Length: 456
Ligand code: TYD
Ligand code: MG
Image (cartoon, rainbow, N blue to C red; front, side, top):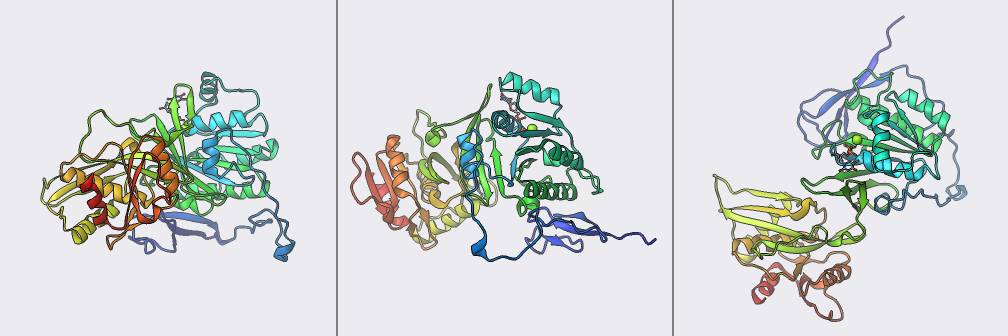
């Protein structure tokens, strides 16, 4: 009998695009050396009896389809529910990524022991032994009785456990150690992770089980990058652990059932992960001494404000070319705004190194911090301390205009609550009525903002 031909393809670990042959550069995203070989199974692979959603296909009128509000499962952690968009949706697949040691296993163990009281939960660990798991749960004084646990890495075996236990929630810790016997690659490779994730996604849709996958993901997205999985899962969140901080931020990156860019904030304590109830100013730990290069902004993360300090350092060029380094901010945007500063305000930093940083290791994903970042840079450049009670927000356009941002009034209210008395905001975000105890300067352009600064 002729040997069945193994079909292979190449998938880009940076963007998830598939290619039929190997090439040095991904033609979809332009990344070099990012293609990884995957097997598509044998050409004669049997067609699955059931479709993706677990039922035989049938064409109906859209009006006849009953749209029930799905009942979400609360995780017991408000901050996690917020990122999920209000709890877990039955049959959905959630990927929780993060650096090793971020606290993914700890958080999920806390969630699962709590959930198990009302919903059957199966926690499958392939990384730790059951003893380690039990030890941790005991140390954290979590309720142990209801949670079902297994130590397993074989996908088919886990599927058998699921059909026996019928859990409402299944945790796979982590997807990188899981494997399918039918895929001939080592665990953790793109091939294996992709096929295993697809296998469990199908299982989730067919059984209505919530599948939560843990993925060790570095910030660069290496280790079978999340991009490879992103299109099949429903919700992708990253647990970030800023260096040296006990705070952890959980950020929604993709969510079919809720808002993206929601931010949940936790603190890692000796009693496990704790929610931070009022996080709006936890990253605002300013020193006693006022120094140039510091400006506080209020960003809007999903559905709530967050006060953060931006710092900049401007210094004469040290080596050959001028450096622009931004940590927690978009480096390209910073370079762009330095050009705006030159073109529209005549201030050049061409012979200066520019460093910008968001204090506390937060990453700002929105444009509302543009103006504040640039004012921090100027403050450092001119060696001029800005008032301690000044708050700045606004987006900067290439024409030098200051553009409005969402939720301006809520941002102002939050800043006022934390004792800020002077604000520089986009013209259209200025309040209709004067705010008691706060001088709000609405500006239309960058030069307008500089005039306000000069008058303070
Ligand atoms: P863990 O949940 O194992 O991380 P991940 O699954 O994301 O790799 O968390 C491990 C880290 O958390 C480890 O550095 C120890 C710390 N930790 C605490 O500080 N307090 C605790 O109560 C626990 C359980 C862990
Ligand atoms: Mg872990």
